[in-house]
Image (cartoon, rainbow, N blue to C red; front, side, top):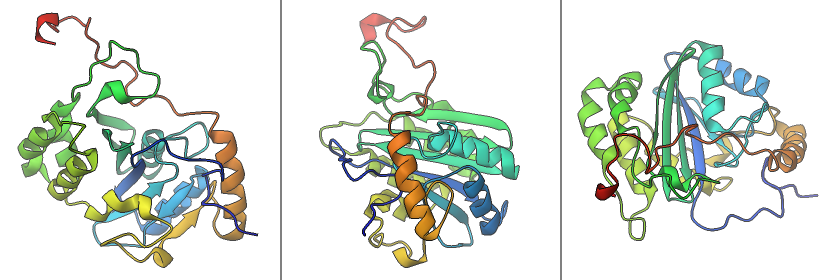
Length: 253
């Protein structure tokens, strides 16, 4: 019997573009084993990259859906990890390669959220803006990543409007990862369960299904994935910017 990747029902087909997500914790703030244990307690579905000197990286499956108990998406999972481990946790989400979301926490404190295109959130109203929002958090993101000097350059990358017809958000993310000293192979995360180009061999990743590993994790992840598909996570921005917001001149839109 062959089971699909935990968390992805067999009849699941993406509508187009790549969706993937990651949670990163500084390796010096929390040992790899503690991150693994915390992900297990959260009922996380995805992959945990092998130990590294700089970052502990967990790749969420599905990238744009619910990946842990309590209707947690990758952002909510990062928040829970930060609080549990009393450490910095950074969430990255790319949806259909047309939207990049970046958020960070330190312990129980949220440091900021960014969306390259709030209008690309599922269920967004027509008056939600399609321009980058939250680039002012760039210095907080850079400081959390231990790269405070990268704040100005990061802000420029985050606030730059991209032509969605010719430029993918993975290209923006690649620049973000370089500035923050994070693994560049994250942009190829959707390659799993095959090897990730320029990343660790897939055999070194730990696969988690609803918090469990091994055969039981495969079964639990598959079952949880079918249920979680009907319970999407909250939107990245609870109150996205709109054309009618005060301070936004409609003549400039």
